[in-house]
Length: 275
Image (cartoon, rainbow, N blue to C red; front, side, top):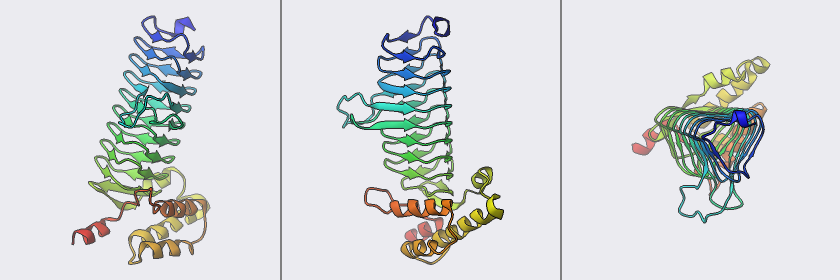
């Protein structure tokens, strides 16, 4: 184990590192940190707080994980940052721990978080998410699996970003991003289905394209028809059922709850609001 840890690294004796963990020069690892097998911790990385990191992660130089949240409500509690397996966390990424003792910030598996991105307190990032350079996620944001967030995007507190959605670079996200949808703009508006993402996920090929056809019909009902939002959701119930459509319906229904931000509208709705 000693040969895998650079002699300039500062590691608390109570930290729990698997014998296969590699630690680069001048890294700092706190007392309550746990790191799983074959994870590589680069130079000048700081791991602090109650931080649990799984297997085969690569954490690049200058990243800071598990430090106190940037939240004035923080009371000093040692709460949890939990990171899964096979993640790439690039240079100078910051991931803050949660605000209260019974809460956590969670990163799943096989995610790519590019340089200078910030993941604030109480965020949940599921699996296979790509977060591009200099993205800023405020507190309590939930990003579902296979979402893509372009560079220099800012996301408001408590926003939910749906599965296989795409957020265009330099957008301002102040409301929920529905699954399978491409949004872009400042403030962001719905532009189209995320066709490239659906193709890469194989959803345009399944059952001779029936999944994709159902999502196209759902998109037209929600964003290209004259129906009200409630009427659109009612019409969605009449479409041929599949797991993706069920997820879209559930996401849109939950987005209407008082504690949620509501879904991002279409560009057409923006024009009507301004008119």
